[in-house]
Image 1: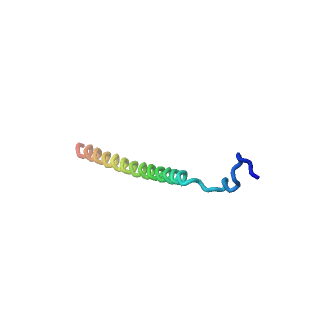
Image 2: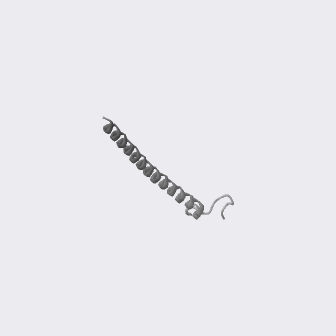
Image 3: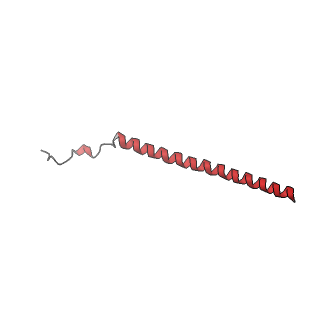
Length: 64
């Protein structure tokens, strides 16, 4: 007979609960979304800076 404080043998083999799986999948999606957003914003900022730099160079070239 099993003692009352022991867990059944198959309890340790049970997969993670639905709540844990949903949390982990959500965490992964958030990480992917934040990474993608960071990359896109970085590219947009670089494009804007280059464009402004080119405009400023053109102003200087036209002035001289």
